[in-house]
Image (cartoon, rainbow, N blue to C red):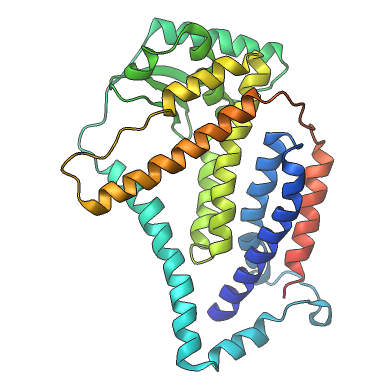
Length: 322
């Protein structure tokens, strides 16, 4: 049963990745929030369909299935040692990537002994008031409940983030705040408020949990990475549209992420190599975000029906992989 579920999930992940690669041709013209929503559903659908099957709910008749997971499970089981080694290398390597790139850094951040102090700041309060007014003037309906509060993080690093789950709060570090003018500050705050408007950390955590359930699946690894980058682009797009100052937001992004700190001088070669890989990846992501903001284009604001229809077609494809 477990082997069958793994094989079915691998097939669904590959099909979802190919499906999204086909839709990728539309991504340049598609508004960033719609593209992020499509990627989120591509990550969520495989475990939801597995839960549907485990719950004993109606499934597609076997004669209509285009992929027989049971038969593949038998073939893999009879494949011998070579097949088992290849499968273990593929799945185990993906799990190790997940552990060392996502789980271990999260645990280390939780184990830090003394978190930085968060303080109230009049300039930040004024920026949040301006941005909230801009969101309301643009017709955005923020989630019900308490609006996020904003604090200054007493560190010299450049940090801008949305913290919390039930009650969100926006934090900007002293090191970043001192470098931003008022328009850049409004752009940074608007970006974090866009995260709140789009579901905040709670929605991102739900997608990450779905990713955890598929930690062995390299296709889902690629989809999740693409989703994280697309969600940042979506919040950039919302902030730029609400404030109508994309250049100020692009400048704030460059000041926040433009030159990451190098690894410490006494770091091991492995840590220095890892820091260099992260630095280059962050530089590429930052460049893409800035170019997207400054590029004079009018992306297609796809209606909800398009996103829903594309998601339903993907669900039907994955459902047929019995």
